[in-house]
Length: 330
Image 1: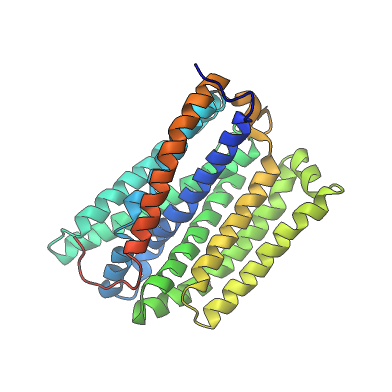
Image 2 (image 1 turned 180 degrees about the horizontal axis):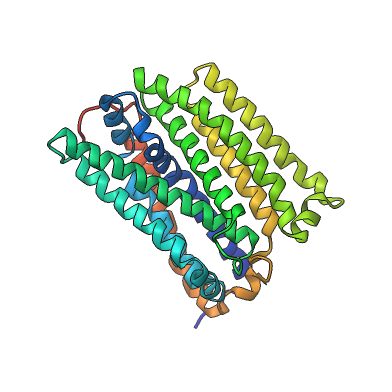
């Protein structure tokens, strides 16, 4: 069996690949989950039709990254997978039920023949999106604390709520870019409103996280680390200000890309806090990695599969670019 470990740092390579895949899932599925969260607050059925149509070509493809990330985690870091997964059985099941319920609601809403049926599926779409998002945040909060801790805690729930507002911001910004007229104006107002809670959630989690673990406190506030990591915080603050200005100035594309940048900066902050651990704060990604021959075999598959998924994703967004109408797409 071939082995690339003599000239490639395979554990580090797969740690970067896993981080990249998770980030893509958060960004891509984040905006369509966010649309589901704000869905019932839209001013009219016509607006809701536009909202659904804006994500119809993308939503199921976006969830490919969740499956790919789970596969990558299982194959590349089996020790961490075996330890972390049992602690997250309940939130994972609830998240998956939310995604399944949301997917069913998405499909059946287009086939509903009465207003009552449509309202039932509208409610299902909203609750499924809300449930999936909240429990993703709960798992993230529990992971930051250390997976041996219970996922049922104040910090985990706070991160879950913060992620709900974060995804709502992404969804609102997506609608500003993809819709026009009344829907766009409403989405812009929703984004400005959500920004207040996003700002508060970011500050709360940012101040709370270093208090959870001494290693995080040392990582962020020791010399010289503080000089390397402080720009991340400053860039996040600047991005929030630029995003608010873009919303006030009624820009169409800037809010979405600035919202993405804000998520990326938050992601970098989390990665900087827990590095090099894949099981905070006990096991590093090197200790949890599979054997070199296994990772080498997996790398060959990833080299072929990842570009295909990236190309398909980019191609679908290219084909369905432009504004969305309210006419049925199914």
